[in-house]
Length: 456
Image (cartoon, rainbow, N blue to C red; front, side, top):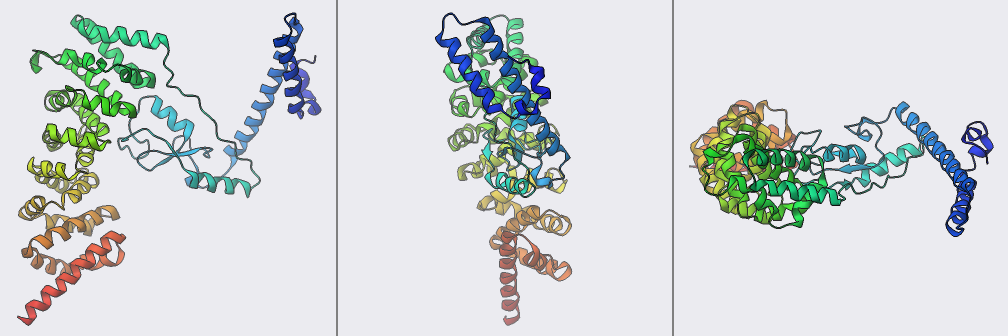
């Protein structure tokens, strides 16, 4: 039997991978069927496997070098690898990445979109067939063979060693304080890095309660060690990323109250992670109802009001998700969201995200009344004039439209704005489709008001 080196120099043999596989199949059948198979047969099989591996690596290398030397459209490149995508997939923010690179990002415990930095509401990856087709046609037109999709093994396999370690760590939650701290820190690390540990909590209905036991009982919140609270709340966040855990985590009785307490009294990292946990949990509509009824919007709004850079984005994301359902809009307005949102927007803090929440609240009568009292229209018109973001302009005009329909006293200011800057007319011509509709509606009503005034 030839050695591997022969395949390096003999192009005839190199080109016959099929023959090599057929010969390998014969050897394997002989080894399996014949109890008296020879050692030489095993050596021959190993040599063929080495040769096939080398051929495969050479093919990949040539293909990779070809991809690297290509100048392809930016939309075909993965934002993480900057290489041509072979298996493009979409994350919850709508951004597209190559599957192996975004999987590596998620398996490392990251919970944000690498491109937008938004917190991911879930970790499902959806194949982007449109981009895949475009890349395939682009490669075909240049005579390039696009590699087949790679079928990845499930990394969420739970071993008996994992299960044993999990139960040991959970038991330590009822041990001495030093043991609790060490176990909590390890669980935080393991649930961040290993999806299998997140899944293990779904196997036991009391595991989450046991995890949180150091934060419960007769202890006052001031007696809970800050580092222990931070590790346990962050572990809850890690668990909530696992889609199968969302319902179980939220419906565990102590979870939402402890997250609310962490929002009020934890370290800033604890408070930020508590807000992020509420955001990921609220991906389920049933959880939106449960979290809203528990009163979580008030501490989230208070956290947003503080405006700490570490927590403001997580708080805003959670509030936005919760206010998708109508009953939570009423709760948010009652808990002071409108004033806080307008204050932050006027201070130019996270304007994009906060305008989106304000626009969502603009179909609630009490919110509109409060916006009118706080003279929101002036600030919103200024944003339309100065902003280059079409989505911000759209949200502003949506809010202004709602305010003006409710409060007729705003029409005078609108006439002055249109006379001086033609802000509404400009948006009616050049805005997004929704912005055009709202701006045109304002202009029509404004003209009727003007005509009525002249007639009178």
